[in-house]
Length: 367
View 1: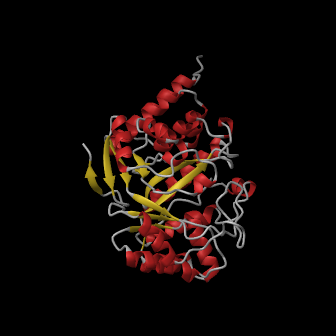
View 2: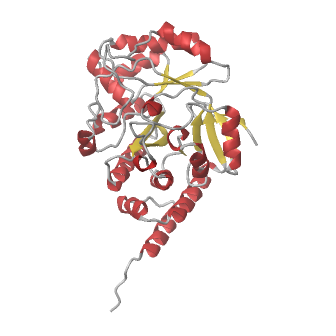
View 3: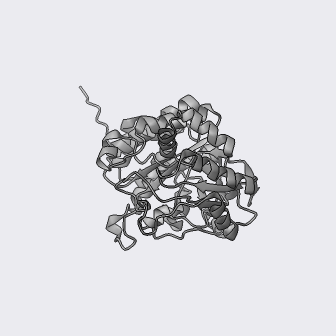
């Protein structure tokens, strides 16, 4: 009698066969990949999966990050951006003040405003509506990518409106899409430990489901590298994969590498390059129904972003102008990058840079 023993090499071959034949990976497959130290095989499979979907094209956008307020009622353990009202450095900008800020930094190539901020309970929901309205009236050609699912849940609480009603009001004001933030790790156990005192797992998913039903295409993220297990990361991916099966409303998945609280923190307090690349590759393999996987240079750096383009990523985000949230938490990367540098970065990986709009329509291909 012979007993079949599954060796790691054999298991990796079985997963490679699944990837080759477009078969969905399981929770167990994902955990196995995280536990494997064979980064090259994982990267090769992810590269194959990505090339099949996107060819050699890598997308970027000219965008600006805007933050109307940093006052927040939540006290999430990982956040260094939030302030209490009256605390030094706390602010809440009016629509007009934000327009003045944008006009100082704006140039005609900007296609998207990326707008997130604190959950400020000292202003009414109408403030958040008017903020978008003011920007849309002044810059009608720029897409408003605004607010996280957690912010939508917060607006629902302070206004007494349903998620659908909140989103309809914001769409009328000019909202084009939701940002992906607020997901952190989609595990109630994790959220309890990390004091994520904002939208829970089901609320996060329900906001995106509602947005998709209203015709919005949205983004989604995963903040990894603190106390979560590999299993919780894979479960997170499966939860959003299941929602995508239902709605097909997500455009892109953005793995966000956790930043330490202090910029002076040593490398042992940060995710390793190995972990960052592995997470991007595994994301591409698990999320077979997502068109795009983003490498976020703000959190992993430009060189690692370039390498990730051969390991499953096909989006390098955008020019940003001045990022604040990851930098408040100790990111050591530039706060923005020029279009020329992004093009150089992509070409250096042997890929084709494509400037896109928010919805992945191709604006210019840099052959």
